[in-house]
Image (cartoon, rainbow, N blue to C red; front, side):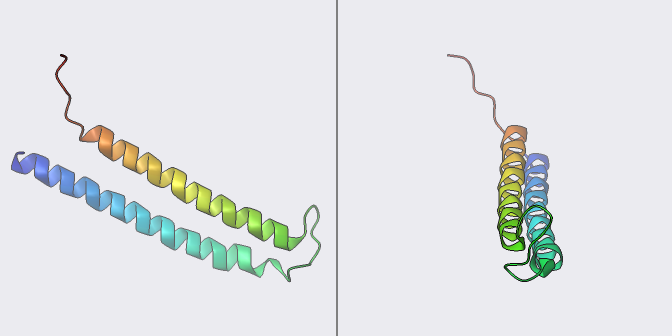
Length: 87
């Protein structure tokens, strides 16, 4: 591995870690600013009680975190894959 490839790999890994931290901070903000203050557990909303809405939003946050992390991982692996020679 050349020094240039090593630097590119390190910068890409730093980008992956940065994306992970931004997702954690963003999800924490959304959870405590939007999801948590939706009211008491049994408060009736227009369509759903707030407790069900809180569960749905929390699951959606978790699912989006996993989707983005798998996409970033796939892009990282794809960018630094060493092509194999045909046999």
